[in-house]
Image (cartoon, rainbow, N blue to C red; front, side, top):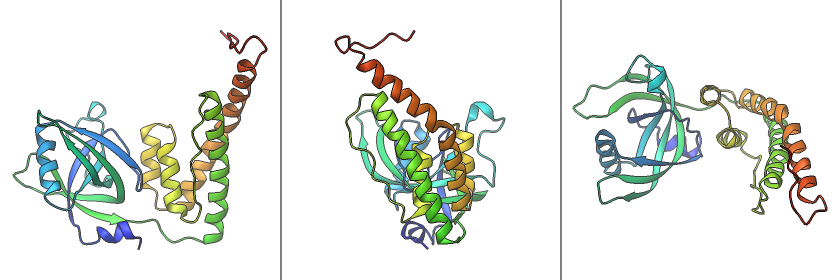
Length: 233
């Protein structure tokens, strides 16, 4: 049992913040709190353990006003909060551990409270996970280098460690641009190997495109005409 998971081992009820966003364990997420019900939630959370649940929910695509029972979300811990004069707040959170909502709790609060069960990935063979982790990091770094070239960036590349494959899979998934439904599917998986395999396959599908764009950008930037870029239409 990892440390973040262990921290929440005794938690059975969790305030819930439904948003059309997928949060992964270990990933940072800034939030702006302005609705009265979530201001109330924030006050209660700050008076307690600084933790609430972020549940993916897109009201525009649902006939209900709340996520369905049984959905998977990620607990978020508040690591920084700044109040504004009008009663709103800007907070920085980080994902802690995943949960399944087993039922909703009837209370007098304006926000949802779920009865939750936290879970981790199932144990798997280290050798297979090590191989997948190395493949994912290699592909991700190729894309990161290409993106840096395309955007003329000089910032240092991320330092990705492969000694914790589950954490690595979450951090890469959080950094990738993909549909929310795909991210939610990765969050729901209980196999690190399957998550890394899906991520590897998605990266393999796009790495050549990014490297080709970077090559064209590099050629266009140094075309021998005073540094002016070629207009490619």
